[in-house]
Image (cartoon, rainbow, N blue to C red):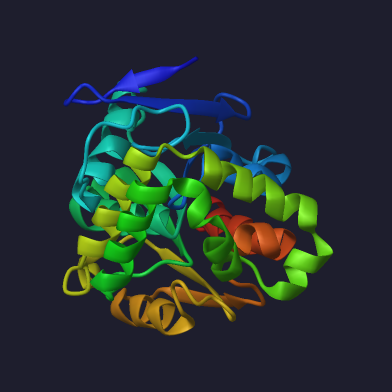
Length: 266
């Protein structure tokens, strides 16, 4: 299995899809999922891009070293991945924790990011006691203890009823996440505050929110879009995992925004 090794010795699992020679699109997953969370987008994206996906530190087939982690550390993992694969610049799309990584990259590694898509994310999530309770629950009772509550936040009741197999596929990712890696990433999300820095992001940016997203509410997306000059904002009729619940609309907006860069040179 393909891995790169970061400066601190952590192995990060990655996967390429799509033809070599196409522009690279880097996808970054949410807390508690693996790179397969992007499967609903892949058939369409690989028609346009060479898609690079990876399992975040603490998740999936990547290593889960002792935490806590920081968003900057997760951002540096993404830079290490690009460096190891000799990729200078990418288009980037991240959801939730992946969007937090995307903001960090836009602030601290702007030369690597051509276009930025920030989905269902926040520049400051707040409520540390909520995260501390979740961390303690996972440490005590394991991942299964939090799955029902997380699924309630991630999908509307309507979608849970209509697409039980899809919901279960995501729930299985959650249950399979290493507890040590999950709680270490929870700490990174809890401690992150990028509100004062995101105005420095210069990359063309699309912010995607979910009307029914209780985890990162639409007001969080509106704040991000308001701080980043020229950012576009799209609201989808979904809860937190909008790329799954509204897969076609999400993909259409993503490709439409990213393809602007192909047609604007002239």
